[in-house]
Image 1: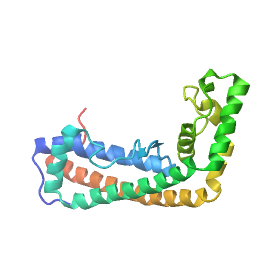
Image 2 (image 1 turned 90 degrees about the vertical axis):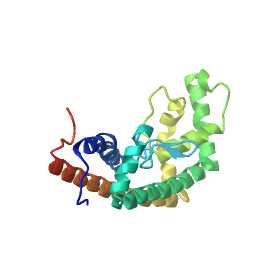
Image 3 (image 1 turned 135 degrees about the horizontal axis):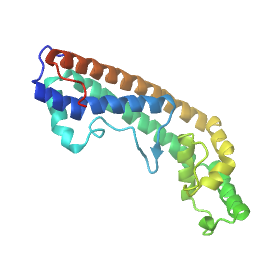
Image 4 (image 1 turned 120 degrees about the horizontal axis):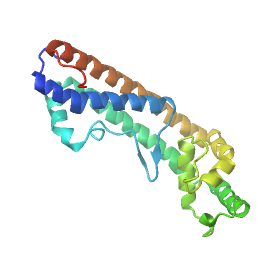
Length: 217
């Protein structure tokens, strides 16, 4: 890590706008990945797993560029993070697409929706079965959702048949696609943890050298 350090005010800006926010989000990424919680969202991007630059507000971009200019060894790790994210996204998208076009899932979703409408008298489903429902149910399967709260449009059919929906994860070809996604998730989690540790070490070095608090009260 660096042999020369920024001045105190620059270090404060680095801490507040780049290092501290990135350490927090990388730790959060690791926590989500430990549960294989992809927070996958139709039509095909993660909600909480983002590139390094996307994790920061636009106004922090110039400070990030300055950090990378003076600490170019970080760029390789940032690139590794973003490449790992891309690979994970591709594998999860493939898993979701296979589910969302599955005749078995379409049939099960249709039955669950019809049962909900007939048994519960739900006006929300009075317009009939829609194929778009399958895409959302596929999302819930990928995210291994528990029972959904009532404000979800598909909470009743999902909760009614949740165990059957989730059982599809263990049947082929979904089991193999799920395993590939989880392998990429583990690899990405290792990258996130290593990068967070590197940033913590860097922050500690700068803090002790310049007598700059890690956070401001």
